[in-house]
Amino acid sequence: MRRLQAVATGALLVAIAGWVMGHAMGAQGGWAWVIAACEAATIGALADWFAVVALFRRPLGLPLPHTAIVPRNKDRIADHLAQFVRDHFLAPDVLLPHLRTLDPAAHLGQWLRDPARVAQVVNVARSASAELLALLEDERLADALHRLLREQARQWNASASVGQVLGLLTRGERHHALLDAGLHQVAHWLGEEPAKKALAAMALRHIRKEWPWLIGLAERFASVPNMADSLAAQVSASAIAELREVLAQPHHPLRQRYDAWVNAQIERLRHDPSLMADVNALKDRTLDDPVCRAYVDTLWRDIRAVLHADLAAPDSHVARHLAQMLTLLGERLAEDPALRAALNTHLEHLAGDLSQTVQNGLSEHIARTLKAWDDERLVTQIERSVGRDLQFIRLNGTLIGAMAGLVLHALRVL
Image 1 (cartoon, rainbow, N blue to C red):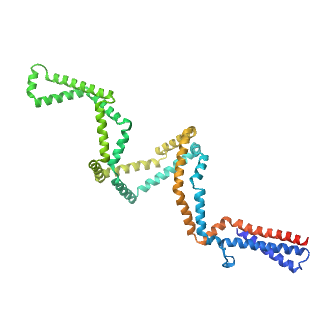
Image 2 (spheres, helix red, strand yellow; image 1 turned 120 degrees about the vertical axis):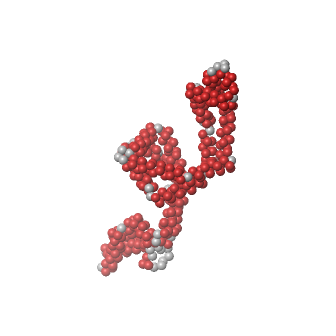
Image 3 (tube, rainbow, N blue to C red; image 1 turned 45 degrees about the horizontal axis):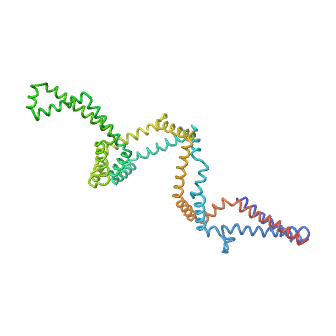
């Protein structure tokens, strides 16, 4: 830019020198043409010099109005530039159509099909994960994180959360699958010989304790152990039959009582102050229990050590699984139009939400940054961007002025 500035200034000096020389040579003949050209060139050069300088400074330091335009209007320029960026670059109606034409899901799928790029992503993820694990080893940070997590856990309404989880698990009668599994297991256990023997022994012990005279009477007619075995078999068969009936009937009374009990417990977990207090008190006792805290700390140290060792190994299992997952994602995106469309839709929604979130914040940051610059820094930054073009304006003004002077002199002579 300085070289062009020197060229433009040199052109002005040449024009002045030509005008002086033309008058010194008598201003006749060809010199009259030189004077006309140089005079108009000088006027054009001075006018454009004034215009260029007035954008950034006061020409010759004179306090002329409407000069030093950029520094004097710095705040207004900052606000307008921030508004321009916000409305023409960050607005959702500007971003989203452009995002649709890009088809980012297709580009991502193509990009992930390149093994070198997948390896690059995996290496970055490994490095970032290792740095994060190393950061978490800092005792001060770990203590602060533990305190933060404990405080958040104390504010957590565990009872309501358990109620919500149970509510999700009971949708579509999914909790009946748990009941069915339990009933199947009980029926299977009752049908086994060890269970029958246990029932017989329990019945025999109870009868001998409560009605010992009945044992003596029964022994006169049959073997008491055999009678106990027969009774246990009949009880087992009856219980199994009842369980199978429950399993076969979707609207069995036992199922209805089970539904009512589960729903009642869910409502209690959500709204019963007494039960909610008990559950949250249990949560707080667990948080304060030294044994529990020591167990969690030990578990976290072990997990961290395993992850750190794996990430540092050349044949890292985590890195290999991540690479496989990314490669599979790339293949699926390349082959599945529905998946691409779904991902593009989610990306559009995300971009729309983010643009609305950062739109005002980023524009305010731009305006605040520009306003914080001193005048000289602002002028320097703009001159670096457009300074060459401004010097060409000065040079062109000199040349156009010279041509205009020649034309006007020709019209006067003719």
